[in-house]
Picture (cartoon, rainbow, N blue to C red):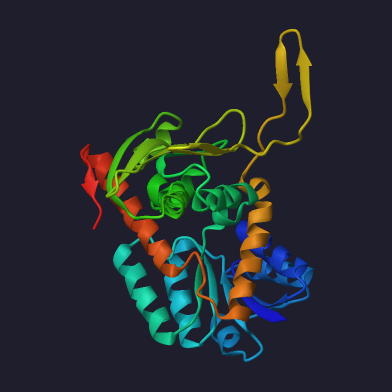
Length: 329
């Protein structure tokens, strides 16, 4: 039984806390949040206590730390947990600044703690099966990868202003997915981006619509398409094209019901948002983290995976602003 201290009692924190409660090998021991009322409500729901960071991390009864607080707190909390010798599962990203993320990883490495990054899409049953079949050689040599990721609607403007921008906030998941599926590091990034959905987003200097092309040293190409608006729901698809065929992972629909008539076929829309679409992935992510703690295997995705995805996001941001390809260093 692994006892968790969780930082963050907001929307994503509630998902993680619920999954800890559902897992027979885990329990939520302590909740820490800057909002005392939110922390108390979440703690009471799952039989946990409310604590402060220093006391919670010093508690010998806490075996691991789950960080689901706001982005600007991640690096400092990872470092504090590392100094307390507590394994960490941290939501993405480690930080919005590459230098700060690298410093954080150095502290975690020196402490020797397991550090896993919350790129939950790797644990989606459809995407993980596609990954396995790629590695098993079902389509031979992978040549082109296409990743589509579109939100049903833009986030609140206050969130956009602190998010780090579309590439570091939204597309960072797709950068991690591309690296994972390609099996090698992209060497060049070219991005085109616009503001077509919400003018107020453009006024902040951010984008809401973007396409990025990644090229590897092997010649493999990956294309990522992002939009902050999809009228038909949460659009999450992957296509892998290779010398022997193609693998596709499509959207998960609200139901499998479809009507067929003389004017065509009508089916239900994709699930509404990421909380529903990736519910199974979040559970599998926690299970994987617990497995690594038991086996001693290195966590994956790792802190280094988080850094590599951030580097690609930085390169895409630069490319979108300059209109030129950016070499990845």
